[in-house]
Image (cartoon, rainbow over the protein chains, first blue to last red):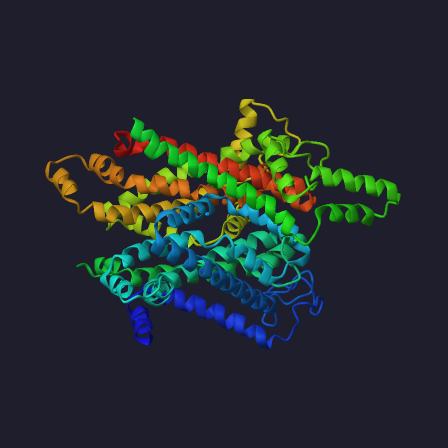
Length: 285
Length: 336
């Protein structure tokens, strides 16, 4: 594991950039543990101050230090991404393993449900759900709702892998030695699909964090809770651009771009590492 | 022909029906699983405005709202009635602009979204594919390298953040595009040349934002698809035969990598549509996105419901249409 990490760091430029970006994000979110301000309290610092040494990202019209607020925001957005990825991974692995291994009618039914979810425009449905649950919305609830829609692409990928694993001789051996379908899927096939699952985890986090921004901007999440999306929501509420408080919008936008680029570059770097064909092509074999 | 109908057309129509069935069922179930009763919420909201309403009128209103939301009877009866109304094209009246029907609000907003989405998807798809093929055919080109880096940089950024960046850059810092809307407030909406020019001027920045995000994906996809094709024997043969490079590129390389990209377009339509909704909210563009935004602001439950259902049906149908013209691209399906 450590050697893989060192190799990637040495040979892959994208991985290096991703590493630096994500480290910055991680440090920022860890800082939330030692924050001098409670993100729930307003008017603790003078309002509308431009970035300075004392307030690196400036202060908001609500009298909050944006740097420390962003520390909480990034932490919560990351948590949301991880929770969504975790729950939707469970669904994706379940559907993928079963559809791939069972085949036949079960496969066809599961895949046509799967394809419906792929094609469906998720945003209007998510808006409807969050609108109805607005009063009881929490970070966990939001993560749960989004994971209901975040699995289909990855279930298909996993199924495709299982389809080929099923034809391999070790599966036959396991079947003839009387291993049940459940054990085969869990013990024999799951380890092979885990790399793909890991890569798609990052992709799913990108999706869910981005979706959170959209829903929060619409005011459809718990807006008193700092996330990247709610930061933009409050800046919009106070018309930050019109009022000239540009740093209030710049902070979440810059942090979001760093976070998303970092995650995406990590995703494509790992994806390439997992797929030996692209690795060979890069060395020029 | 018989095989084509059974093997190709029937499954497509079946998938179309399944998407709509699942989508509509999900939108039917969600409100009924929600702990908040929309009827009670509506009533408490009206009471909250401070107006004194006598209990009898409240009871009357409760009955009317229950009827309107289709919450009368058992779950199964509600479900059947729900489909019945849907098939008649009745999505109920909007609450914030009572009694305008939801369908007519959607009908007013839809052309804007459709126009914006169609043009930008078409531009980004065509441009992305052509540039992607160029990039793998001329790997040493400096210009393609720049586009490659830009595509990778823009692609992961969420629609909202990216359009905000575009808005700030090109309407706030460098004032070359109008700030918001599709036309200045007070303009008479008519199909005059002057009005069309105004609309194009106002739509340029939203379209540009959609194109820049969308293009990256198609570009990278085409690049990796064609990177195998350019070393195929038939390409080498065409090169040795002295065919013009442009002919090789379009007739041999792009043509053979186009099918996955068409399929990809079908699979992406849903998320592209969602993206366009977000973008409209940022730019204040008067389409479906803005309608959704106003519905959320105005607590208009029936409008949000209508938009969700309409979007699902609309996107599923677009995918079906794309599937139906797919044989034009794929001779194997055509000759079956």
